[in-house]
Length: 387
Image 1 (cartoon, rainbow, N blue to C red):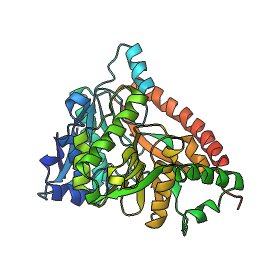
Image 2: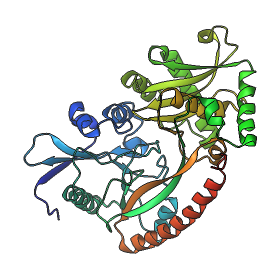
Image 3: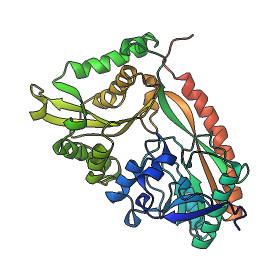
Image 4: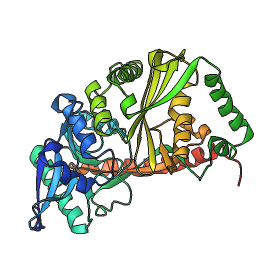
């Protein structure tokens, strides 16, 4: 039962059921839970019931206010693809016991493993957090969800202790220590690692490949189409399908967030790059202090081009714009040798079945100890000189 009568709520199946002004007032300067990002996912049909990501956002109201005071973007899931917090083993355990793991409810940014606030509000309180958990617990019972999951939530978001299981993950982010330029960054590295990066970059610069940054008006419909072909080719090679996101999503993204998006593109035989051969691209997004690299793809193979477009160009851009951090996406231990450092990520979970909840809690504890050891191993591989 919901004990706090100061709040009311409703679930909505599209962010457009709330005004953009109300949503953005809660989201603030967050990029991946902004109205534009989530609306583009829905409007382009990149999410929806047919994809296994059915929007089911929770919106909270105060009985004394007309406008919402909090929102938690959420989805009813019929699978675990596109989440990057892997619970396949949990689903398989349910199946072995003839139990249904799906549907489940998850608060996450679909297909994007980026750390950021999931609970959007201007004023946090224990009472609000408890009301949200009570609301979700009741909904889980009514709709037979196996559990509730909040992925990549900053640890600063304080959920009531003991009600959610905290799971750790590890990503690799680059941190700007007030570098004047890329060479100043390289100067902090051991000689062998510095030489490796220079060699990789030289191979691209001495080839007939030219790298160009495209922004705003330069990102024409043809460029979007070429980038989408790159995106699809990478997913087909890796996963056997064209990817989760539609071409319309990228069209809407560049149109609605022009100041936050850019493409780092590679062209071959670039006397007039607009008419030359487009061969690869990486999507970049930028907020107040962070650069995000997402959705790389290439139409042909070229050694070290991935590192150039997805890492080195991003580092240079972060330094140029004075950004504090560069998040180049999930996984990738090869990032360590190129100056990316391990960071912990946090996700929160609960299951409605008490026996499985206990088993998963034990699993998470064991996993956390293993990750702590792995974290130390990653730190030992960093390429920087001894201080």
